[in-house]
Length: 205
Image (cartoon, rainbow, N blue to C red; front, side, top):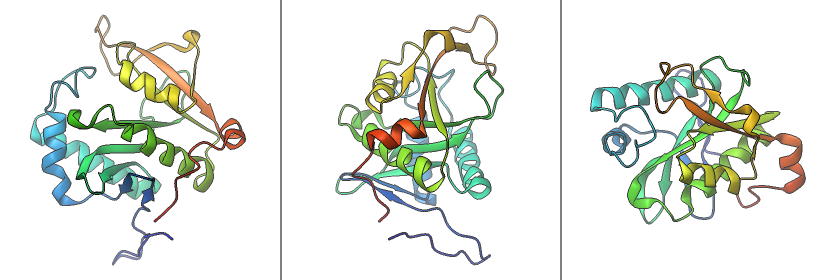
């Protein structure tokens, strides 16, 4: 079952995706305050150029909603029923810069630090992968981060994504000599995912 309900303007609201413990759902206005707290947390933002003040966090939320409106998918709000109504985001988005692997769709996540280490990111990401490869029929999904972000790299590996050192790249949105400019790229193709039946417990609620 989906909760893809018509909006007043006739368009469809984004679908929600459910795993055994997680719910990926459309964003709500009430999500913005806890999202701002996550984006201001130096632990969460350690591998990004800077933490985000509230106006910048709200602007990011605006861009996420615009991505959903344009493409029908994006980084969903992550709810963990019985634990928290908003834990961060997990989802898919079109890479917005030029690199050797673009055009591409990436999978990404950002969770409140107090919820790290419980497998929520990997479980939710598996749901997003399933949606990307089945409903959206994407041929490939990528992910990337800096080499020091061991937690995110571990999630990529747990998802079965592949890394090749020859595909390391310098992020074009960061200036030369920036300490976070070097990124590692991971890939996963639809055919391999289909063979391995990744994310088998995910479904639409």
